Image (cartoon, rainbow, N blue to C red):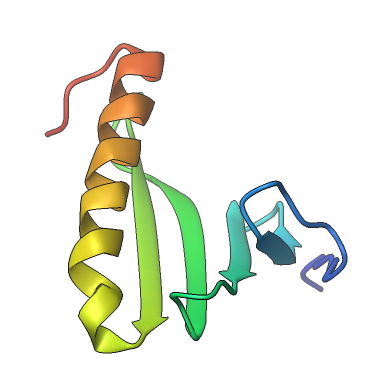
Length: 91
């Protein structure tokens, strides 16, 4: 049995709400709604990537499609911040 916790009421200051947290799979799912974004659903998962390495898989679906370039740029900035915080370079 896989442990899954769902907490749709947990919302941060950016309008994102946690939808699912699965510790065993090292995966979380969140959603966001704003004036500019009709739908923003995302998942983040950490997987093993060789000895002493991990890979972060971040999948985001947004509507309207016109907002995608903005979201892409925000994700790029977040990835750089994660790399800096972890003291690692992207492979």
